[in-house]
Image 1 (cartoon, rainbow, N blue to C red):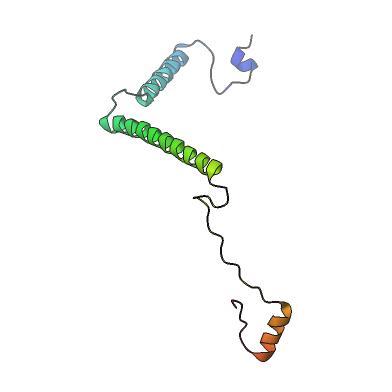
Image 2 (image 1 turned 135 degrees about the vertical axis):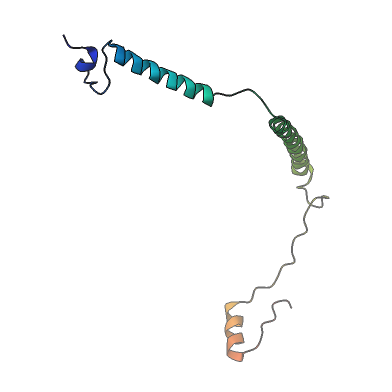
Amino acid sequence: MNTQGERQNFNWRPNDNSSTTLTRYSLEAEHWTKAFRSASFKGNGSMRNFFGVIGLILQLAFNLVWLLIYGIGSLFVWLFGNKRGGKFDMPLPPSTKVPSDDEITRAYKDAKEIDIYG
């Protein structure tokens, strides 16, 4: 009768219960146990990690306060600053005269400057 490994074509990994196979599996299990133990977290936190976490918490608190203040300020400007003549209005730039196509053509022909401000 075929073993399960032979039925599933796992010929690269023996599935019998011989002493050599069990010894190899035992050695492999010890190897993986050591590997997982050495890769696990030791639990000895340092002061650097502690202050890093404290810094992250303080930075989060500072950013939330700043966001709250900025949001209240933006809401205030949105509510009270859009009216004409309000304290927060930006002055409009002075309007400039745009030369027409005829003025530009004449300026190139006469080779003189166009007075766009007057």
